[in-house]
Length: 210
Image (cartoon, rainbow, N blue to C red; front, side, top):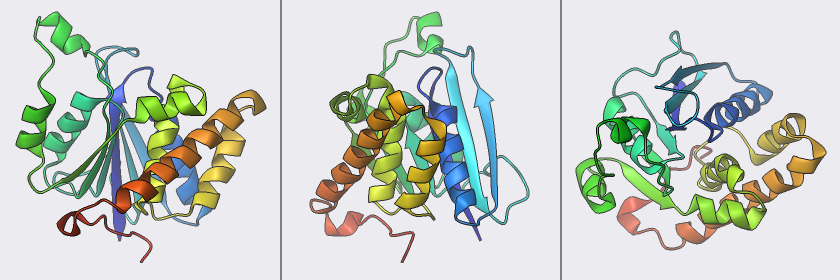
């Protein structure tokens, strides 16, 4: 069995760091992992996607209609990931907006959030997260990626435990940054706990550990 996760955002948001943390945590749990990354127009500001495939898989790129979870750190890039993958089970989306280079080059306006939701939410459970605000509460706007990992853990959307992610965080960040990222993880998990009490009966978040 394979569990497929796509992370999407723009350069400078820590997409690759987030993918590496998820991959290493899955390895700690004894699972096979393949991770691949795709860079867009430039390292900072261009589209970046990371595919993490956990379990028995033979290719590094998630096939069409085979994604279980999208974690988006930027609004429009999340919707692009959903579109490119087709039948996505669940999408966790930071509501941060970073004007992509592709829009600036063609002098286009950022799409309306409501229009994007109407277009892409059919068949996909999409959960918008004010991850930027949560990251600032943790102590750094750069901690959005860890907030979103916490949100996924809180919804039980990873095939590994929080303790394994914590171990990887301790191995990844120096002491000065560790406390901020640990707080970001905790706040993301807490956000999910509050959200689950308000989720409509028909939009129940699947439990990957059940």
